[in-house]
Amino acid sequence: MYFYPRVAMVGLGATLAGPASAAIYFSTGTSHAGLGSFDGVMEFTATGATTGELTVELTNTSSAANSGWLTAFAFNVVDGVTLALASPGSGWNLLVDASGSPFGIFDFGASTSTTWEGGGSPSNGIAVGSSLTTVFSVTASASLLATLTESSFFDGAGGHAFVARFRGFADGNSDKVTGVLVPAPGAFALLGLAGLAGTRRRR
Image (cartoon, rainbow, N blue to C red; front, side, top):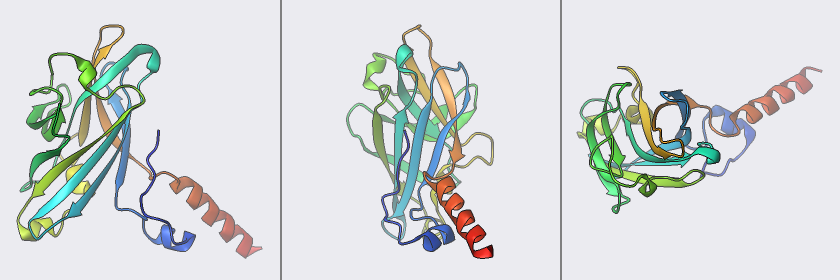
């Protein structure tokens, strides 16, 4: 499943000059057990001089044949930024310095439990084919917040930028899966159209 930009495209030329939305898109990277997979989109909006809002939307794209729920995720953020979980307020908890072993320690995230490993029924997580939108309140100094972009919350400078945790597969296993950036939906098609237009002009 892919996510589509919320801002209407004015035209092909404008779209190629810059993205219609500042959102970044990511998907399955390295899977520890080869079971879980997901698609995601992340978007940051400043709401004040020292405050902002980060939205993370995830879709569980794991195989329906083996079920499995996405029960936690975590990501690395540039230094000086503090996050608090704004929504969903029920069933999910903020993670700080989450151990996403074997992929390292991650600054912030959310879990259906109070820990990364989780406990209780995994069915409180994101089921196969379902999506969840999580919103974090962002706080930073005015000088830092003015420089923040989506990439500031997908910081791979020290290793992996994002990791998701899956539990409750039908075969009894669990998984941890990193996230990697992917092109925005439709980007390849738009670039193909631009190339076609260039070819026609040269004739």
